[in-house]
Amino acid sequence: MEVIKTDIEGVYIIEPRIFTDARGYFFESFSQREFDEKIGHVDFVQDNESFSSYGVVRGLHFQKPPFTQSKLVRVIRGTVLDVAVDLRKESPTYGKYVAAELSGENHRQFFIPKGFAHGFAVLSETALFQYKCDAFYAPQSEGAIAYNDPSLNIDWRIPSDKIILSAKDAQHPMLKDFTSPF
Image 1 (spheres, helix red, strand yellow):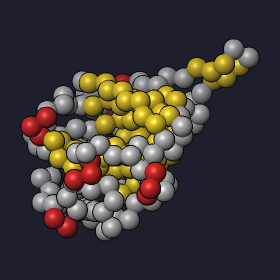
Image 2 (cartoon, one colour):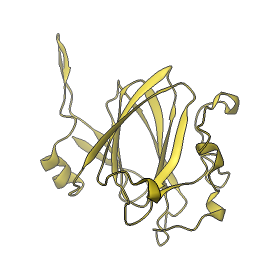
Image 3 (cartoon, rainbow, N blue to C red):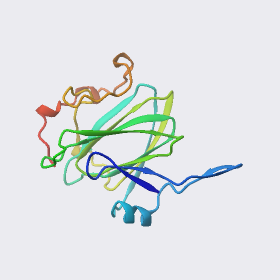
Image 4 (spheres, helix red, strand yellow):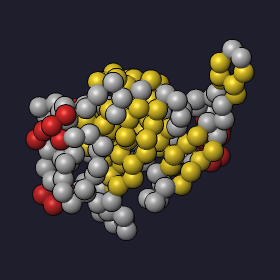
């Protein structure tokens, strides 16, 4: 796997080595040994999957301490714009974000460490999205910031009248009204 550093320390794009022939393709979607060598040791304990249609924006979610999560995300089918926002108070990149296009065609993965809000927008007709977490989901620890915060200025690449949100995701606070627990 090739690990690509992003503009924010600790956030990586991962490109697997893909072997193709007349039958199709093969790649290792995860190797603990290689992940440890190239990124660092993370014990993933839960795998999640979501299916969404065009225009769905999920996020920007995180879990508060002591239930913080690192995530390794990928798209099996379709295309999403995946976003990680730095919420670490002492970080020089606090309030900045990194975005990566993930698709079933490019097989890229995105590693998001603890201390970040995470979200994605579905750019294709549908998308099948999978991710690994290094901590179990704890509903009492949920947190989020607004996907459309003007201080973040994220271009979700979807016209605003086509964005589909959950009722919960439509009500998150702006970054300026948020006190980071990280």
